[in-house]
Image 1 (cartoon, rainbow, N blue to C red):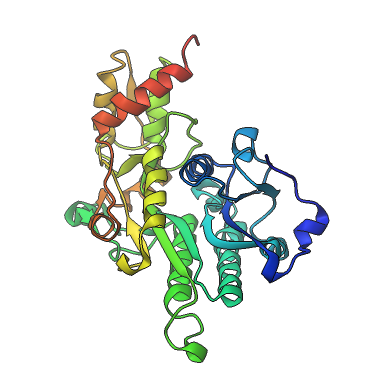
Image 2 (image 1 turned 90 degrees about the vertical axis):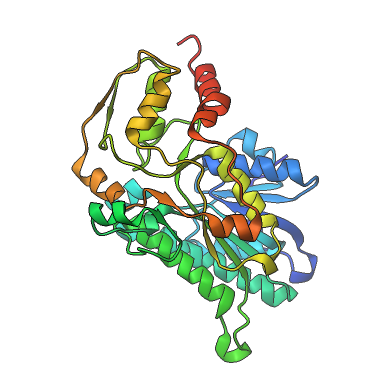
Length: 357
């Protein structure tokens, strides 16, 4: 069962020697947090999980947690109070302002996405100082860190590696790339003047493509034309797609995203050759998504009316990414093609969701 923290507990009333070993998950109330917390609880019996989110957590998530905390990752004092009571050997930092909201409030987005990440990195450094062990911080990043200058360059580039075209066009992408660099610095160069180039923590990041889920509704993200088309099909509604027919981006299902986090988190640090990794499962065009859905929903009608701003953003993102490093370093293997994702996960899920409606 979970318990709400009291003010005293938020401020910390333990010592470094009597802290309970636990895993911290920020952004625990989101869909990725839901899936990750359940996966961690299934995989590790008696694992202490602290679920941290800006709002309270639903019971089905909170019941997997030792404690839940409603708070802001910008609140360094709150995080330090938690670290006084728990020894966080692993931190899964999922909390973030996403792309649409970040464009509308760039200053706040920077404070949350970059400042909040630095706060968590500092908590990890304090843990290393207290225990002598390097805690792991696992950070979900995004293909929004890329920025290809022209559509012609995108077509010519094809599949993109981790180190190419790192000139993001959105505040969200800038924030995520900055956080990646902070993590790399803390992992490889922090305190290099005092201690030499040993680094303080074990930082690992995954650059996720577009994510498609059968469980939750899309929320207006820039890659959500795929999920929106799926849910419109299941509701027997027409859909007006906000990108061109030939727009191509990499995608994966939400369960695959959770699996990749668990797999990377379990990999020995010695096997990792970098701090940020691409992952992907399939990379269809918008028209190919439409065609694949029509095999399951023959009545689906889709129009294509590109939104200038959103089209400009996706034109700067890779048509596909190279996940060779993840495959070689930590054994990443996608579960699905577009067809198998639809047949085995997405179609059954959305049909169950809208049954009887």
